[in-house]
Picture 1 (cartoon, rainbow, N blue to C red):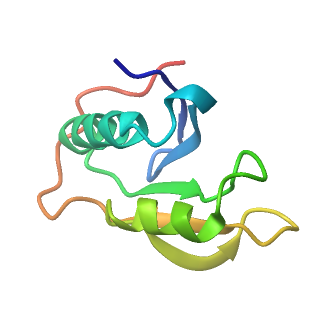
Picture 2: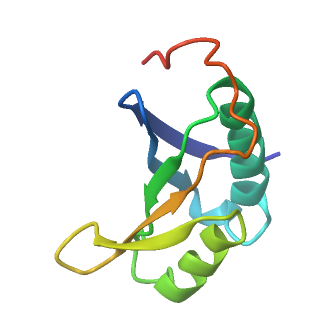
Length: 108
């Protein structure tokens, strides 16, 4: 079982993953990987849009380099922009090669 909190936003052309949070006791057990794999699959199938996120560590124990590598393993790449004064990178994952017809708008 895993516990991951997610926040999403969509502006018509891009989906933004605002936050992915894993409880401290659940870290390094694969819960974020499982959740992000499922989320990306669903977003690709339903929307077919590029996805952005900010590789910003939640605490001092989270290594930025490992975080960037983690997101890169899902196809995200640094786009040269920074999320904040600490220079945490903004990362983007292109739309899937076969663009899905949007089935619905994201609702919050």
